[in-house]
Amino acid sequence: MIDQTATKRPIADQMYDVLLHQFMSGQRSAGQSLNIGALSRELDVSQTPLREALARLEHTGLVEREALRGYRVAPMMTRLEIQQLLEARLLLEPHLAEQAAARATPEFLAQLQETVDAFEESAEQADFETEGFDLYWRSDDRFHMLIANQAGNSFLAMAYAALGGQIQRFRLFSKFGRTGAKHAAPEHKAIYAAIAAGDGPGAAEAMSAHVTGATQRLLG
Image 1 (spheres, rainbow, N blue to C red):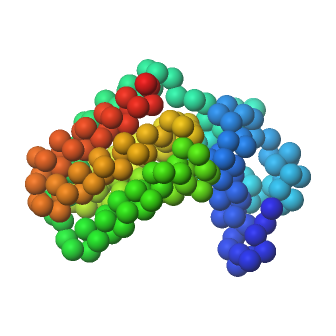
Image 2 (tube, helix red, strand yellow; image 1 turned 120 degrees about the horizontal axis):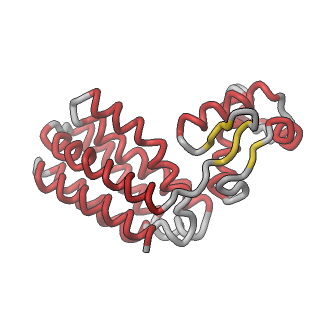
């Protein structure tokens, strides 16, 4: 399973990508046990880089470690967890968007536009193809992280990053047919337009609508 064209990359990095791809493709489902010995044999690598990759995935929220039992893929979010995540995001992300609008720079706007374009490109395939879902995942994550970092408060950015693992879990286990990417793409555009115009309240309102809409689409 090691990519021979990327042998200069640490094996742990390659295993991180392999496992993440397996999660996104549905090859390993929510709650499934991740036995390190079995993974080592299956992927033909030693256990040390696998342990490192799993430890990194644990920090994203996509993998959990249970005492005396090892690792497993994080379980599906409960309805209550989804509602609580929505509450947390609504407290944080509209404010980040408003502050990012006040501090927007040409470089930041160019980077944000790239994520908007990539997300729109993914919208048609995200619910049906692993590659489309991968682009959807990464562009969405970068869009929100760019805004958090541009808001100008490192503590709030750290708070978003800490929440980000659970947002990744939310994205991943929405799975194919339920991402709502077609609906989210114009929402990203609306957030971008408000930020680019320096309209802080408008950016906050657009972000609130987006976060709420994403949750309603998953629950619906």
